[in-house]
Length: 140
Image (tube, rainbow, N blue to C red):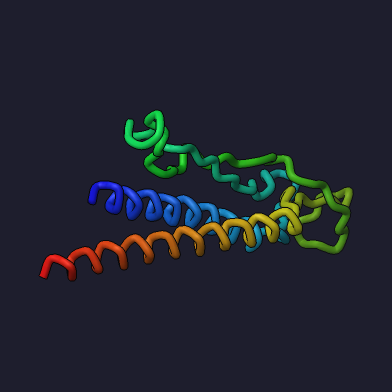
Protein backbone atom coordinates (compact mmCIF):
# COMPACT_ATOMS: atom_id res chain seq x y z
CA UNK A 1 0.00 0.00 0.00
CA UNK A 2 2.96 2.32 0.49
CA UNK A 3 3.40 2.71 -3.27
CA UNK A 4 -0.23 3.73 -3.63
CA UNK A 5 0.11 6.45 -1.01
CA UNK A 6 3.37 7.44 -2.68
CA UNK A 7 1.53 7.81 -6.00
CA UNK A 8 -0.98 10.12 -4.33
CA UNK A 9 1.82 12.24 -2.86
CA UNK A 10 3.80 12.42 -6.10
CA UNK A 11 0.73 13.43 -8.11
CA UNK A 12 -0.30 15.98 -5.47
CA UNK A 13 3.18 17.51 -5.53
CA UNK A 14 2.95 17.79 -9.31
CA UNK A 15 -0.45 19.49 -9.08
CA UNK A 16 0.91 21.92 -6.50
CA UNK A 17 3.99 22.75 -8.60
CA UNK A 18 1.98 23.29 -11.78
CA UNK A 19 -0.56 25.41 -9.92
CA UNK A 20 2.23 27.77 -8.85
CA UNK A 21 3.50 27.84 -12.45
CA UNK A 22 -0.01 28.63 -13.75
CA UNK A 23 -0.36 31.40 -11.15
CA UNK A 24 2.94 32.95 -12.28
CA UNK A 25 1.90 32.73 -15.94
CA UNK A 26 -1.45 34.34 -15.15
CA UNK A 27 0.34 37.19 -13.38
CA UNK A 28 2.68 37.66 -16.34
CA UNK A 29 -0.17 37.68 -18.86
CA UNK A 30 -2.21 40.08 -16.73
CA UNK A 31 0.72 42.51 -16.69
CA UNK A 32 1.81 42.17 -20.33
CA UNK A 33 0.66 45.73 -21.06
CA UNK A 34 1.47 47.32 -17.71
CA UNK A 35 3.12 50.67 -18.41
CA UNK A 36 5.51 52.31 -15.97
CA UNK A 37 7.24 55.64 -16.05
CA UNK A 38 10.96 55.90 -16.74
CA UNK A 39 11.63 56.53 -13.05
CA UNK A 40 10.19 53.09 -12.13
CA UNK A 41 11.16 49.51 -12.86
CA UNK A 42 9.06 47.63 -15.39
CA UNK A 43 6.86 44.76 -14.24
CA UNK A 44 9.20 41.82 -13.65
CA UNK A 45 7.92 38.64 -15.23
CA UNK A 46 8.05 35.59 -13.01
CA UNK A 47 9.52 32.19 -13.83
CA UNK A 48 9.00 29.15 -11.62
CA UNK A 49 11.99 26.90 -11.00
CA UNK A 50 10.96 23.39 -9.96
CA UNK A 51 13.11 20.61 -8.60
CA UNK A 52 12.56 16.92 -8.15
CA UNK A 53 12.40 15.50 -4.67
CA UNK A 54 15.06 12.86 -4.04
CA UNK A 55 14.11 9.20 -4.33
CA UNK A 56 12.87 7.14 -1.43
CA UNK A 57 15.27 4.26 -1.98
CA UNK A 58 12.45 2.05 -3.29
CA UNK A 59 12.04 0.64 -6.76
CA UNK A 60 14.66 -0.23 -9.32
CA UNK A 61 18.03 0.99 -8.00
CA UNK A 62 16.20 3.26 -5.53
CA UNK A 63 15.15 5.61 -8.31
CA UNK A 64 11.49 6.22 -7.51
CA UNK A 65 11.24 9.88 -6.67
CA UNK A 66 8.87 11.67 -4.36
CA UNK A 67 7.54 14.23 -6.81
CA UNK A 68 8.44 17.86 -7.34
CA UNK A 69 8.49 21.14 -5.49
CA UNK A 70 9.04 24.78 -6.33
CA UNK A 71 12.60 25.71 -5.41
CA UNK A 72 12.24 29.41 -6.23
CA UNK A 73 10.47 31.99 -8.35
CA UNK A 74 12.82 34.09 -10.46
CA UNK A 75 11.90 37.60 -11.56
CA UNK A 76 13.21 38.82 -14.89
CA UNK A 77 14.53 42.10 -16.26
CA UNK A 78 13.36 45.12 -14.22
CA UNK A 79 14.58 47.39 -17.04
CA UNK A 80 11.85 46.13 -19.36
CA UNK A 81 11.44 47.48 -22.86
CA UNK A 82 11.51 51.17 -23.67
CA UNK A 83 8.57 52.20 -25.83
CA UNK A 84 7.86 55.51 -27.52
CA UNK A 85 4.38 56.60 -26.40
CA UNK A 86 4.52 60.41 -26.25
CA UNK A 87 0.81 60.79 -25.43
CA UNK A 88 0.93 58.44 -22.44
CA UNK A 89 0.59 60.25 -19.09
CA UNK A 90 3.63 58.40 -17.68
CA UNK A 91 5.90 59.26 -20.63
CA UNK A 92 9.02 61.27 -19.90
CA UNK A 93 10.04 64.38 -21.84
CA UNK A 94 11.34 62.18 -24.65
CA UNK A 95 8.01 60.30 -24.86
CA UNK A 96 9.40 57.04 -23.43
CA UNK A 97 7.72 54.61 -21.02
CA UNK A 98 8.73 51.18 -19.71
CA UNK A 99 6.88 48.06 -20.76
CA UNK A 100 7.49 44.62 -19.27
CA UNK A 101 9.70 42.19 -21.12
CA UNK A 102 6.92 39.57 -21.30
CA UNK A 103 6.69 37.42 -24.41
CA UNK A 104 2.98 36.65 -24.72
CA UNK A 105 3.58 33.75 -27.13
CA UNK A 106 5.99 32.13 -24.69
CA UNK A 107 3.54 32.64 -21.83
CA UNK A 108 0.67 31.06 -23.78
CA UNK A 109 2.85 28.08 -24.74
CA UNK A 110 3.92 27.64 -21.11
CA UNK A 111 0.29 27.91 -20.01
CA UNK A 112 -0.73 25.04 -22.32
CA UNK A 113 2.18 22.90 -21.07
CA UNK A 114 1.43 23.63 -17.40
CA UNK A 115 -2.30 23.08 -17.87
CA UNK A 116 -1.78 19.70 -19.55
CA UNK A 117 0.75 18.63 -16.93
CA UNK A 118 -1.67 19.63 -14.16
CA UNK A 119 -4.41 17.57 -15.85
CA UNK A 120 -2.13 14.53 -16.13
CA UNK A 121 -1.21 14.76 -12.44
CA UNK A 122 -4.91 15.06 -11.59
CA UNK A 123 -5.61 11.88 -13.57
CA UNK A 124 -2.79 10.02 -11.80
CA UNK A 125 -4.12 11.18 -8.43
CA UNK A 126 -7.67 10.06 -9.28
CA UNK A 127 -6.50 6.64 -10.54
CA UNK A 128 -4.39 6.04 -7.43
CA UNK A 129 -7.27 7.12 -5.20
CA UNK A 130 -9.69 4.83 -7.04
CA UNK A 131 -7.27 1.91 -6.66
CA UNK A 132 -6.95 2.62 -2.95
CA UNK A 133 -10.74 2.72 -2.54
CA UNK A 134 -11.12 -0.56 -4.46
CA UNK A 135 -8.52 -2.17 -2.21
CA UNK A 136 -10.55 -1.08 0.82
CA UNK A 137 -13.67 -2.67 -0.69
CA UNK A 138 -11.83 -6.00 -1.04
CA UNK A 139 -11.22 -6.02 2.70
CA UNK A 140 -14.92 -5.72 3.56
